[in-house]
Image (cartoon, rainbow, N blue to C red):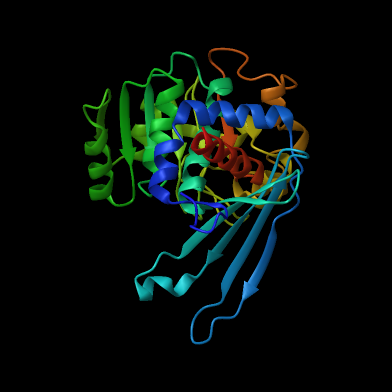
Length: 320
């Protein structure tokens, strides 16, 4: 809807969720990575909060000359839990790259959930086995259901297992999907769950590795989404060593993702061993899965290009 003054569209979370269906969003991301965009390094600012923990302001711009520009504004207020508020909140401002007009202000949190899941699905189209039918979801947070739906949209997923540190939450998430074209259950043993799966998707805040390379079997695809700082880790060095490694962007993953940064530092991974980034896969400049028994690993930390593509899709859908 318009803001009532003829200004930019104001798009709330529920509208974003309804508009951004997985299939069209995956294709929008593919096209965006093929076209490319200008994506400056994100701006990171510490903000003092009197009487509470310091907050963080993140600014993530991107633009495609002559088309659209945009910036995601994210705040992280660690003490918000004490106020009954989310710690992380955000908005996305979409702008015309032809004349600078503000076109839309879009809920940033739902936009991020949707585009993050779609990026994993896009990677899976290149990297997971076409016959992958068993999905393991590691983590039970807000992103988990979106990742499940995204992976199920690009592969014939018929069975789902959920693992979480809180088993009750894992059971609830599995129950929400059981019978919805999927046979779903929760498992207490992560080792057992990893050995069972064809695709393993992780979205956690783990500081120590959860998935062990010794548990992996041939032909699996490992989708690591949760670790977004150099100190965070979802898989160990052995998993990285055994897999053919891909990233969403070299610039982001080699600087911000502990699952890449730490193996690079230890020598378990050489930067030249990273087989490709999403843009190279989308443009055909990097090969995806080469053979059935290969283990593949995709590390996602997010890029402003994905936000721009998702915001563009929201705006153009509403304008129709």
